[in-house]
Length: 450
Image (tube, rainbow, N blue to C red):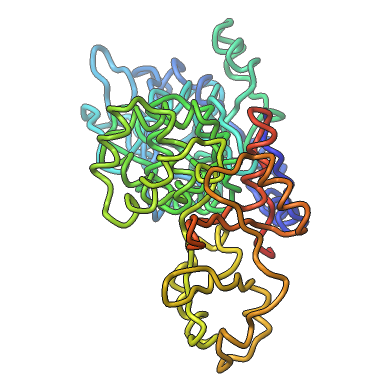
């Protein structure tokens, strides 16, 4: 089931503005598009008009300095039995009929790809890409190049099924672009190289910015739609915290498969950046041997937060809670507590408040973020203690009891305490909803004002 993601008004406006400034929206560019699939196999002629070979591929430079639209550095041509290299400086014209060179005298060197270059037809066409504007996985049916201000650049990708038919049909069809199906290249994130030498991490920074704008649920959908190698490439391109957020939104069986596909170090790193309850849910989907190996390899801090959760059934309070708590004492000042919270900013979505405990570790109160925000910096926590009092359940409480206590108190979370009243974890309202709706989807209450 698709995740219930509702983009904000500002997000929709920003997405529209990004699209409106793209090259393929310009009429002169759209009318000058050259189909790469149509160009392959077309003749290469010298200045005198004599045919010297046929086009095999176009090569683009693909690094952080190329901007949104990679420039062509040259063409690969079949000359006799050789794959010859034609630098773009030697090319006079490129059109639907083929390529004409500037000179009749050429040094037709054998093609050897340099670092940072990509053979577009062989390494990108028919491969999976990520459209960051549309938040979807696409497969390139064709690529389009155009001369922009005197430089030949890759400007678009065609993902239409008709382009595949066009490539399979008569040669005369292949040169006919279908610009209505073009996705502007500025919104594309390429997932590694065909031979593994290039990765998108070293590729276009503009596409990485597109990834960072995506909602975790959108990234989760992308990960579920990608093939194994492309999925690993996309994860490698994401900051650890963003990758962990995306994994938390994935369907459990898909997440378990992803962890099995990753090498142990990568899987451990991902689990360590996930929220403890989400990491525990992921580990429950694995075989005992797989789970034990990953737990043993985890750093001490994340392992200590995750392992206790696995002792509880997932349909009990102990199995639904997150063990991430910020414990404070009555003598702490609001300023001190705020400083501690800043150190936990990466876990802000799981922090509904701070837990006040006494000298024995027993629960005294649960101070909300709103109370901390409104309090004076020099106030002591003891001054904030009072009703409404925390909603608590034991670790063996079932989902029905947790939901009932949550509704009765009109609260956004429930604290899980042991028999001595010591807080063990917190169950957020969205975790309760997830448990109640089961396999019908996942829900996230918005906690950030964006």
